[in-house]
Image 1 (spheres, one colour):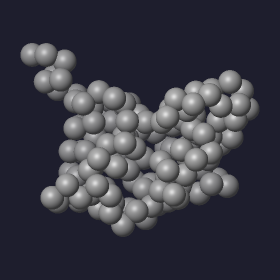
Image 2 (spheres, rainbow, N blue to C red):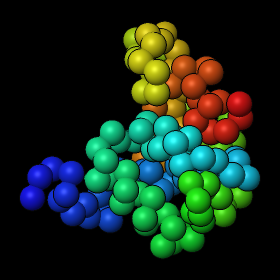
Image 3 (cartoon, helix red, strand yellow):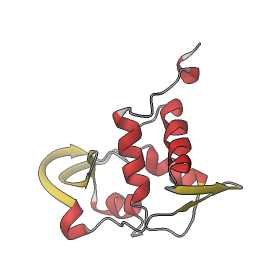
Image 4 (cartoon, rainbow, N blue to C red):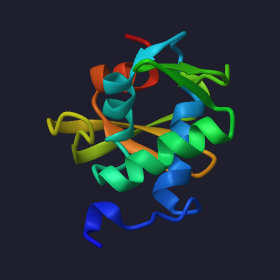
Length: 127
């Protein structure tokens, strides 16, 4: 069994973090590619990505049909409460740009980030 075929435990921290992120998406619908773009802020492992998508569907977090994903939750990220700003030397988790201020999403299963000011809006669906 190669690395892409191994089973991923649904209780893997990356799976839980990915599920928590998908629960907070602010879109009526997204393409599968857009959802994978968001999940890649948690992991680039294809097996974990598949597990996150499968578990999200099983748990009723999303619906998938014909390459379109529809989030079912309406628990959006609140910038004043769920986004933490930290000063320091960071690299954006989404685009890799150097940052002096990092934005982190505080989710129940952990903290996700850092992101730059435009990537945090993209990841959360504000842009």
